[in-house]
Amino acid sequence: MKKVLIIGGTGMVASRFVDLTKKILDITSIDEKTLDITDGIAVEKYLEKNKFDAVVNFAAFTNVDAAEKETGNEEGLTYRLNVLGPKNLAEYCNNNNTFLVHISTDFVFPGTEGQPGPYDEDAPLPETPTGIGWYGWTKNRAEVMIQSTSTDYAIVRYAYPFRAAPFELKSDWARGVIKLYEEKKLYPLFTDQTQSVIFIDDLVEPLVKIIDGKLNGVFHIASKDTTTPHEIASYLLEKYVGKPVELEKGLMAEFLKAPGRTPRPRVGGFKVEKTQAKLGVQFKTWKEMVDEFVSQLNKQ
Ligand SMILES: NC(=O)c1ccc[n+]([C@@H]2O[C@H](COP(=O)([O-])OP(=O)(O)OC[C@H]3O[C@@H](n4cnc5c(N)ncnc54)[C@H](OP(=O)(O)O)[C@@H]3O)[C@@H](O)[C@H]2O)c1
Image 1: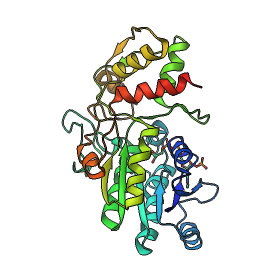
Image 2: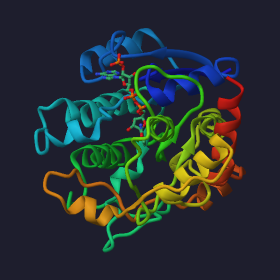
Image 3: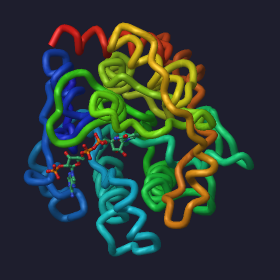
Image 4: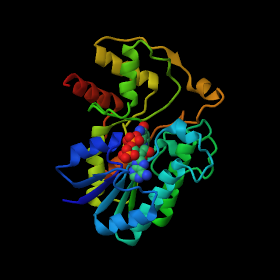
């Protein structure tokens, strides 16, 4: 069994991954209280004392709007956690023959009409932050740093994760849609945003393959097709309530024009063919992921 360190193990995505893999990997799951990855000396000390075959970094500053308030501030928590933390891990792993898996996001790309998705695994990363928010830019810079300093690494990108297993600390987009619908507070949903999604349980097989095989490169783990927020929420709610629902439609292009909005990919999403071929797996469609999500919710 591979000895694997999961950093950010109490987070929304990682905590589910850990629950589903603890019998197939020898996992140590930690959060900030055990190791603050922004502290380079602490990282070195911890990883010297506790040896692992692979280090998987899920930790990040993930509040996209809060991150935006720190734009340009390399002393701020967003930059320190999303760039310096991964740098500390990459330096240690590189010098000590340890495989590093770094978790990333579709937000590293602008998702604009000029540079549209769906992006494939080899799509060049933008070299300027134009059209990218501070969260996405810091995740972008971490990828560039890892690719230039590491020799034995995987960068794993996914987008719009959701889970049926309860998680108290924060709500994912799917739970949010159900809650707002039930409270009759659901706002108009975008019909002009292209997105991929990932049901978190479907991360397990591909991510374990990457960890077990120490597979290098950039991987996209996502639904094999793209959707829009309006389309996927309509399908999800129809399955959940058992009858078709009419949801109001909105335009993300209009939404993003309002002052103070955080830039986010509108014409985004991932291509996954190269990852599927490299791993020898077929990902589910977004409808199949939603079906499994609703089926698990109904059993709770
Ligand atoms: N959520 C999304 O929609 C989404 C989409 C695409 C990609 N991603 C990526 O997926 C990953 C996981 O996201 P998530 O939303 O599941 O995360 P999350 O729920 O926000 O959890 C973040 C984790 O990072 C840990 N952490 C915070 N500061 C730390 C520090 N200084 N040192 C070590 N650990 C620290 C937290 O531990 P404490 O609780 O102890 O602070 C927590 O375990 C991130 O890399 C994110 O960029 C997320």
